[in-house]
Length: 303
Image 1 (cartoon, one colour):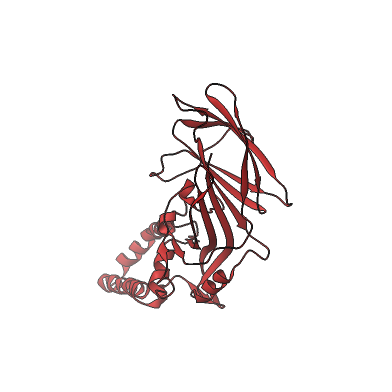
Image 2 (cartoon, helix red, strand yellow):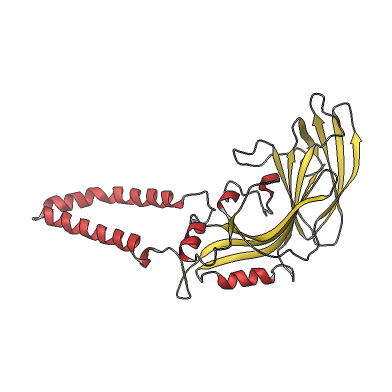
């Protein structure tokens, strides 16, 4: 269906399958052409049909891949996330904050089609930036290999008035000359995603999640730091406690900053799932776009 993000190219797969079918049928058509009395006429008519089809696809609305008609539903898929971000310094103070509606395409060339066919909608939008842990974005899953942040756009929106993810460093315990254990207590909405990147000369060797062995996630070539991902979901208003052991190299002090941690709280249901800004943007979008919407907070800390 071609809905695997902005980085995949489904056209190549479809072209390969179509070429295979053509090659399988080609020998029979060649024999048919050679037995015909007017070979040139057959080739001319076939070429004309092919050119007519290409012209219709490339130069008329018939080639537009999306439709919002109830009788011919082929919508463009996208995700709209109303986000509210805060970046904290080493002392815990907010050093930067912003908010907006993040448009993430699930189809290839989705942003381009939106800019070409709805320029008035994207007039005030800006290209999304990649800053912070895993681009500093409230990804629901580690999807940089499917949706590159730099190929998405942000619409202006107001700040959210919802409960944010709160985290506290409960204990910083030295386990040896080059090993320290960080213990945390976290509280947030029912769906929380955590992205952790290592500081230079600091390596997470063990944590309290799953099989206790950290597994890094895919990142962009421009991102040199090792990054890890945790998805947390719960059904009650509880505090989650976890820990990680970090090994340091060289003369790096155990009291120095060791990791950057980004925490995203996702409101996927309930009264906070949508905002007035989201509803307003949905009304302005073309009918052939079918978005999945939710709100999310993002807080980034240094520990």
